[in-house]
Length: 210
Image (tube, rainbow, N blue to C red; front, side, top):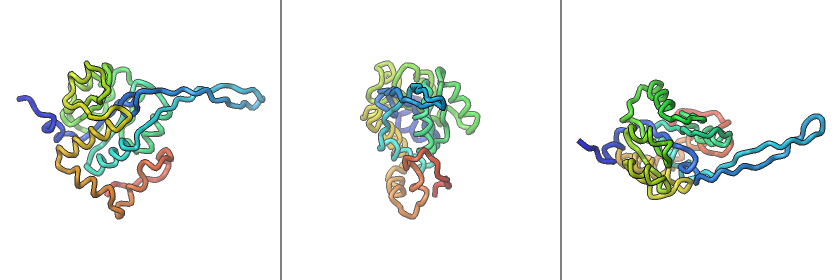
């Protein structure tokens, strides 16, 4: 029996994202930064920058309120990814992953979940090995045609423009808890929400979500 996208989404416990082209628009900015040395010489350090969408950050909060765990698996290695992951308090952060199923298998072993309980959001052919086997395969609107062809769901928005939020809300809606999560997100009694995605690299103490 072929499962619908909604039926697949209902099973999900963990949502994993690629980064470049999914949580960003795919642009990679590399800036030369002069760094002074003790002997007075100046060296140039190359710093990588990316742009993230606040709607996706809010989506991560919604997913947490819906009982999800979340993470990123990316081929590149960048401090900006680590910083954003700390802001969002992501449970899983795997960088330098040329073969992303290796990270997925580690997460499965660690969390005791099956592939049917994992959603992956991707945009390029390097994501296909995971998308082909995970429970809910999501392609962003700007994904390569080959990726869209094998996805269970294609987001209405492009990477870096709220595609991550699209995927999260589809899953929460399929589970019947989206409205509940929206209400919980604006509940001022939930003090934990004030500590998530405040733009300080996650350097404040965290507490369990209410």
